[in-house]
Image (cartoon, rainbow, N blue to C red; front, side):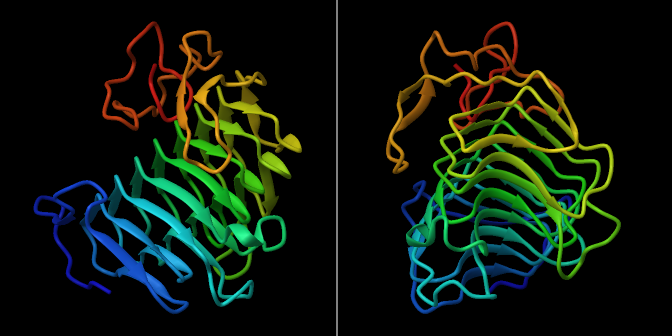
Length: 286
């Protein structure tokens, strides 16, 4: 647990000198790193082990980027304590979750445990971009509790029970999750749903230019859907276990099919967006 806070002009930064070189192996069933301060960056760490949670944003205005959180076995089993690779918690939010790899989170419970997530948003005004998420027991990217006004753009979420889930429920529920923007995501090969709304929803939820394919049910939402693509993304080397190459071939329907609205200016690999006529869909820019 870390408690120190920076300021908007002088942030505190925890950085692995070599990306994923600083490895934290958690034992037990708890939280690996609970960041309770605000204006803090956690950049480039590798987290694995038996615990329930990788990075927990209890503070506000945090940035979690370039981290690799994988093979959390959730050794305490499926219960009300839940689990997630990355989650936001607390009254404020305003967390940026960018360019992380999340893989195999409670995978042995896939399809059998609804409380284990990849990226879990539980409060307002968070931004989730350029992440590659796979092998999660429940949802690759999920909102719940009092989550609202999320920006979920240019992620690749595959081989989970659910690709992306938006909703409110349980403690923190207010008037319903509203003003969410979900765009330019590749959502592929998810067992139950590609993109779904559950629980309490409000208005002005928009889904733009997402590629959703080969999932049990691609869409179950009441929000406004535009520019949806239902074709295979044509990954260079699709492996369901998360060890493949999730860039796309030149013939991919994801190329130049995204929207520039709220799109990040770089992709997962740090390449500038856009490179062609328009922003691509997914975590990588072709």
